[in-house]
Length: 174
Image (cartoon, rainbow, N blue to C red; front, side, top):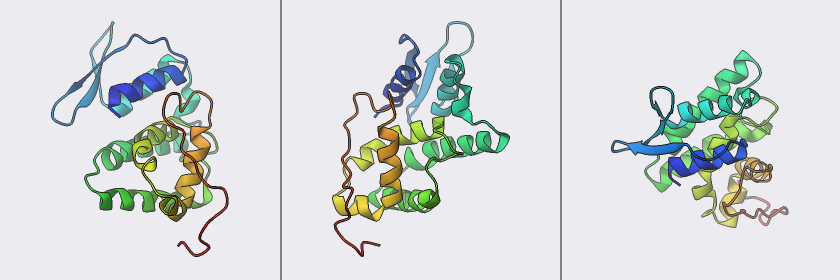
């Protein structure tokens, strides 16, 4: 999914009126937001953070200094690891790393949904939709987290709902 499409989904989930003008710049198609009263903003994380502040939903950026730093860390992860992947092996490594991290967590940063969860959900959707049942079981923590995030009101929107089996098919899938 193109960054502009993700940013429009984010706008809608934040309750913002559509109308922002997005473009992409350079070989990597870095998103650009044309602002009415100032310079253009570049980069998925920068624009998304701006939209969150515009919607007065700063709680999505974290509530403590540590949570705010973690949100930024996961936004960087999204841009560098998810958007920068180049092969099936990269995707598997990414999912393995994320699966380990989520082993004892419900959200990426803190105890509530944040912008990091939302943008990582959007970024991973194209990969998760293609996983087999066995792969979803292999990355059980990612599957649990993803399923949880996709059921948040206004997050999934028009993206396809991904089905996760609640009963494990294979007892020794790890």
